[in-house]
Amino acid sequence: MRIFLAILLISLSIAYASQDGVAKSQELRALVQDEQNGVVALNASGYQYYVDQSPRPYDVVVFFTAENCGYCDEIYVEFTQVAQLYKTNGAIYPSRDQKRAVYFVKLVYTMDTKDIFTKFGFQSVPNLFVSTPKMLKLKDLEKNEYIKSNLWQVTSTNGHVTSSKLLEHINKKVGRNVEYKEPIINLLILFVFLGLVGAVLLKLFIKFRNFFINNKLWFVGSIIIYFVCMAGVVYDIIHGVPFTNIDRAGNFEWYHSGSRSQFGLEGFLMSGAIVFAGLMFILYQFLPKLSGVGMSGTISYIVVTVLIYLAFAWVEDIYHKKSGFYNPVFWPPAHYIKGPLMRDQGNNI
Image (cartoon, rainbow, N blue to C red; front, side):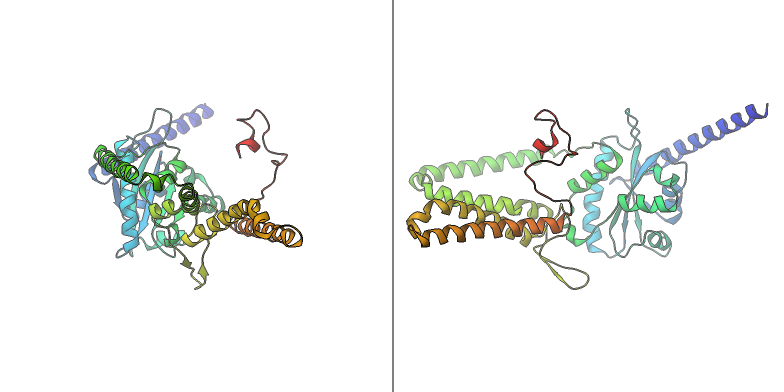
């Protein structure tokens, strides 16, 4: 009888907690729907209730900011665009495939919220934190590791943090696949612009046909295009990547330590080294004409070979500094998956 009562009490507790969590989710959803930008501003007590208190059957994306922070305001504009995407795509409701509802909130640094910022150990703003219900069940050490893996401390070295970059980050953390859809008017403007550019280029080609079919022009042009693309110029422009950086210690930085980030100068130097090595390979076929035969020809081949080696060795050294696991080999390691061409990890890499 006692066992039955205990089971009954536990079942009732679970049911009550579940209802309490659903009610809390509905409250927060109503607040989100009332906000045009899809972001709810919380104070300290609201944060404790909606984010830190169990039960909580939903995910929360928290934007930590402060008053009079220009950079924070720039990122917040992008943040609200992602929040609106989640809202219009119905991601503020649980999905049919068991994905939790996702809500976007912001917390401004004040005397009321100071303790929360201190708990995270923030030294600057803005910061982005993706919190799932799992966090509420973890103990201190595990919770700290969880926070580290789900916290994005945004700095100027990240360049221009666009809504697409935020969307990709948040989708990955919450397991959603919300997609950015370009407004139709923007697509029409782009289509008209490309049409006009194409018409102008066609007219120029017809007028200066002999110039454009020159082999030397295409050779030089292809090298320039390759150099620009390898340098990541388009990426730098889109994401507002700084050309160089000065770290907190006042040291000059020309390459980014992150394996998936770069500075503008880093891209140009790395691309320049690779293009230089490629041109040295092309130079091989002209060496007999330039240096003749005999000892002088042999020395020329040795010099060019050494230059190629130094260029590739320098590029590889930078990759090693950016990523500790980088180790180019001709064959994949023994632990890589073997199999048919499209499933073999070595071939894919």
